[in-house]
Length: 256
Ligand code: ZN
Image 1 (tube, rainbow, N blue to C red):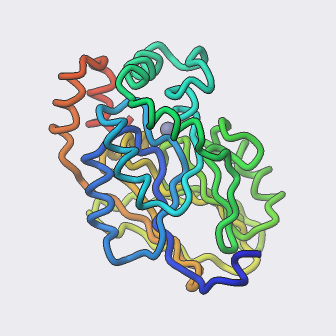
Image 2 (image 1 turned 135 degrees about the horizontal axis):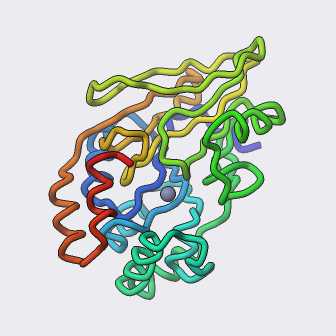
């Protein structure tokens, strides 16, 4: 396996960027110097005002990018039928502004899971990229069957994740710190099992509007969670100019 051949590295894990360039740039700025490679768990686009800008920023920087449901819908691989009406409007707007090259790029993104070092990355869950792992009902069966120490996932836009401690106790992982920057460090223990959600860069839904990401140190078996404010009014202004629906603009400030 690849993990045996390369030295253990620090991975910047970004998920659910959703065309929010202001948030993405703040995350990259805060993470500067703290990582060796960037991994992206999907949903580069959808909802936000800068689909081309977000793709063109992250594409040359990331080592691995897997696709999310919005990447599929916005590039026409799937239709947006299952989306709620607001998400569908966002999808149609995104399709109308994406360059042909960026549509092609979204269509070419690989489906997870992808193996990185000694862990895996997925968009939704190991078995279905569109699954939401929101609580124990979905997370517990996944944890019990894990053949690796950790899986990084996104899609829910909730930072944290779930774990089975070495003695088998189930726990949610959640930081409630209001500090900007590093908010929590999780030490992964031998014999435990972990589902790690770095949070959403561009549209958090855990009640905290600040952009979220995580850095996984594969050598120290440690995950650092971060939150950072970004220029939210600038993003909202661009969305208004684009004529995107007001609830999509407002939800960014509530983190919902
Ligand atoms: Zn998403």
